[in-house]
Image (cartoon, rainbow, N blue to C red; front, side, top):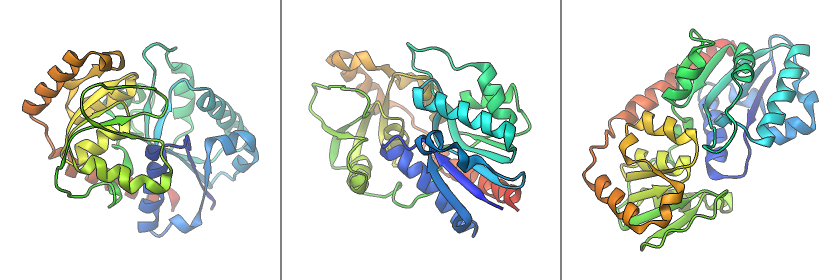
Length: 292
């Protein structure tokens, strides 16, 4: 049996570590060495990698792949076309709906078609779970982003950075209040410095999904700066909906100060982290059963 793993591969740390976490989980179950990895642009360029037998398996994830993005749209078109010709087992792992607030809504017809190919669907947030359960209730499980399974993601450091701004690579966002900035698009070899900055921060203000997620995992006071439904999904998962602010509000120092003040007194439920870990372990066991 062939195992193909396809990940977003959009050259940011979140995508890179999501892929690494899935490989780590499979390796722990002694199946990782049998798999081959591709990023979506490679599959678009060479659809032949999906000429598979019915007992072969494709694992797709993690990341916000259920949303309008030119590369994602092209990938799903290629994937669905090839699946009709070469049906096989499919696992969706740690994926989420990701619709920019000012963009077209992701087609329910496309979503239904994607889900119909899957043997198992692991979604990273409750809103995606609700949407997918409409079409595939028995196959859909809530599985927070698998990156928390990597030991490098959760580390204990002294909190010596008062405020950290985690900037998304796709936005030229600026913040005028005193802070330290890290970008989710440095050389990926520098990801430990990126992670350690989050782990050392007291307050993390972030327009990066993983900046918020990893800040929460490391007991920071996180403030999500939203520009798409990926944050609505994440905020619901973490229980931090009242802390949400919009990307345009970064330019308003008063709004930022007010949100920081709210964060100082907000009751973050960091106890959720152990539950997230158990969900990922349980989902990995389900994936291995499909692969057997």
